[in-house]
Image 1 (cartoon, one colour):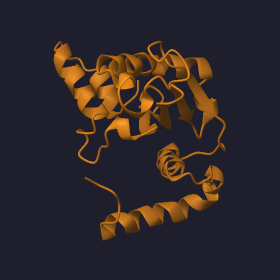
Image 2 (image 1 turned 180 degrees about the vertical axis):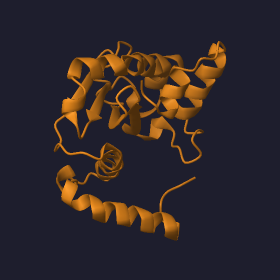
Image 3 (image 1 turned 60 degrees about the horizontal axis):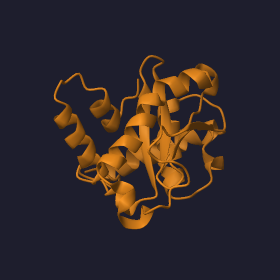
Image 4 (image 1 turned 90 degrees about the vertical axis):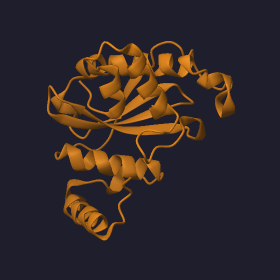
Length: 179
C-alpha cells in the first residue's frame, strides 16, 4: 500500500466516490496540498510512497509526457519487482483515468504529445540507483535532486549525516519549502 495524498484518495474507505474524485482533481489542479502546482504546468510529478506492508519508502516520478511511473528505491532487495508493481498497480490505473476524466491531454501543453496510449495503465519501472539503507532520507534527497536535475551520484550513505544536518538547519531557519 502506498501512503501519499494521491494514494489516500485512491484507497479511501469512504463510499463517497465523488469525494474521492474531487479530492484527486484538486491534487491535479494544484489546489491540494497548499504548496501544490497545477499538473498542466509540469512535465513530471514527484511523490513519496510508503509501502506500509514492508515499512519502506520509495520515491515516485510520474512522467506526464512519457505516461509512465518510475520508482527510485534505495533498497531493491527488500521488495521484488513483481510485488512492487503489484503494490503500485492501483496508481498506474488511477492516474490515466483521472487525467482522462478532466480532459488533461486534450488541453494545454500535452495535446496529443503522450508517447503511448495514455488511457491504459501506465508502466511502472524501477530505476537503477545506488543501494543503501535509510530509505526515508534517501527518498527526500532523490526527489530534491531529481527535481533540480542534479545527478543522484551525491546521494550516498557517506553524505547522509550532512544531508540530515542540512535539512534540520533549513527547517529551523524556515528555509525548507513548507506550506
